Length: 170
Ligand code: RP5
Image (cartoon, rainbow, N blue to C red; front, top):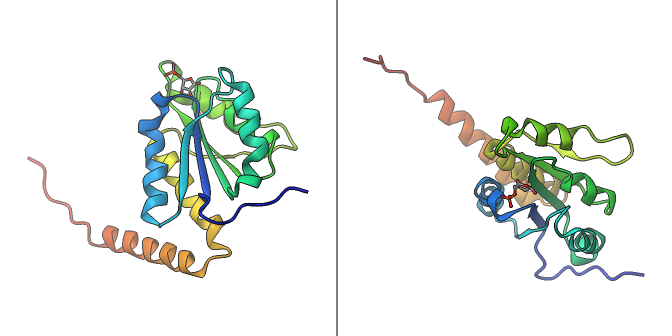
């Protein structure tokens, strides 16, 4: 039987297919950091490091991770392949690649066949930030302090919009 590590282990894994995804995926990392959620970010490519991907996914629970955020561009099979090898929640972020503006990534991630779910977010930074927020929501189920932080975040956001004023443009 496997032994779960709990001490000093990051709660969330942020993985991505290339270092070129990092500028986008940093939005997820920033959101987690803002909520005081520990994370580990690393490059794991589905087609260029398939053995590493399987090793990571197979060991993710034993490593103590609670949520996996996986970002990829192109034919973005990374989130689905990782989800196939773990029962942890996998949050997929489509990254806009050179062609098709990330619509290829979005469809690859969202259109999972029945049986292996991947939660799919918006293309790009908004999706990465929302994946971070969604990870916070999952962790907040068993963390009242984090749940309170989420309420504060929502209230602050609401206040900001209520205080918006519009000026005439020249
Ligand atoms: C995917 O291919 C990566 O997730 C990245 O979005 C895309 C391009 O990778 P690089 O050519 O920039 O390494 O695997």
